Amino acid sequence: MTRKSLEFPQGIIDCVEATRSRGTVLVASSRKGTNAMTIGWISIGSIWGRPCCTVLVRPSRHTYKFIEKGDSFTVNVLPRDMNEAVSLLGTRSGRDMDKFSEAGITPSDSMKVKCPHIAEAELVIECAIAMKQPIDSSMIRRDYVHTAYAAGDYHTVYYGEIVAIHAQ
Image 1 (cartoon, rainbow, N blue to C red):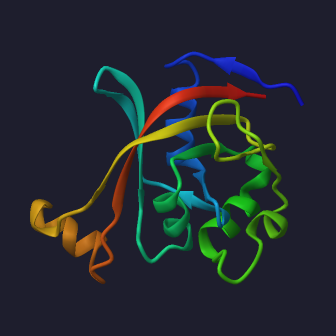
Image 2: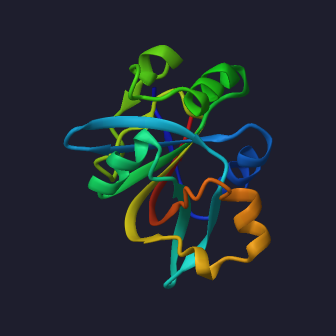
């Protein structure tokens, strides 16, 4: 299937809206493999004068070991009729299964980064990791800590420079 390249910020509003209404899927890879997970915490804008996409991943997630060892990630918006796949990717662990096979999604070579994207995605954002930063609990408002980190499982924030955006 031929994909259409988009320039920043075209298509970004659709991606942000998807995280609010149906979720998006993060794909991360390293030399040891690839994994996908549903994400809800994402920010898109401009940092360092470049288009950036920021995602958060908890160290307890199986995807964490892939994004930590990799140099890129992709953000994928799946069609609405794939909500079951989005749900599976957010509730099951890649430690226990091949999530791509179980969710009925296909990894596909990306245009500009080593990390694959999901072939069925309506919109893909390819990101080269520019910076990563573990969240320091002393720097967050206490009410956020109580509601988002009761178990103490603080995210690492990944700042990705957007190097390609494409759609079906």
